[in-house]
Image (cartoon, rainbow, N blue to C red; front, top):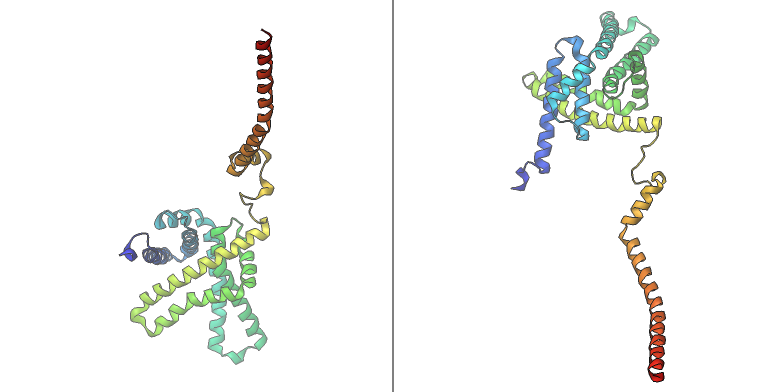
Amino acid sequence: MDIFRYDSDFMQALGRIADLAWLNILCAICCFPIFTAGAAVTAKYYTAMKLERGQAPGVTKTFFRAFKENFLQDLKVTVILILICAFFAYDWLYIYKQGVGSLSPVVIGMLSMFTAMILIITFCVFPMIARFEMKTFDSLRNALVFGIIHLPRVALGIFLAVIPFVISIWYFKWAWLIWLFFACIALYYNSRFFIKSFDKLEERTFGPKETAGDPEYVLDDEKSDEEDSDPESQEEESEIDESEDEVEEPENDEEEDSTEEETGEETEEE
């Protein structure tokens, strides 16, 4: 059957699901030392965006190459985020033990706002490192701005990343399968979202890319070559040549008649 051919849509979809599942497994394995989690997430998004564009020759090879290239910068960002998250986690633990009523609503609101900002930065910074080259603090700042601009889509991405761990509390036996299923959906959704958003960001920053067929950017020599290779122009030139030949034919006939008359006269004189 055609559905089981290697180039069918069904088999390509299965191959894409297998690639995404393997990417999540590789990322989970490389995240066990918590300080390498940032490099693993960056490599995961780098490879996933390459797959979405059809540019990744091999998932494992591309993953570990990106893991190695961005390791130092990801390590710096990971250490900063771990320290900040530990600080906010301690604050929320203190509020939980003391009770919500022990602090003013203003303090709790400010703490909630800063916690949301840290979540946005953590979600957006590693895909940005995978796509752009920038300094550490610039990447953190740009990730916050990017996340606030695309807040609804970022919130959905964070929800898809957190929901499998919440569901696994009630279905602990199938936790790994639940996590893998939602991780594939989240990676597919997030990679498409980041590709579209980053492409728009590049167009706003550097302008739209020039198309090869735009007549404004075609040189005169190229135009002349195209005209020579254009069959319609060649047909028009041939028609013009034929019409010129037809116009010249009567002149030749008149010349032939005059020569015949001259020869006839010469014979009569003789």
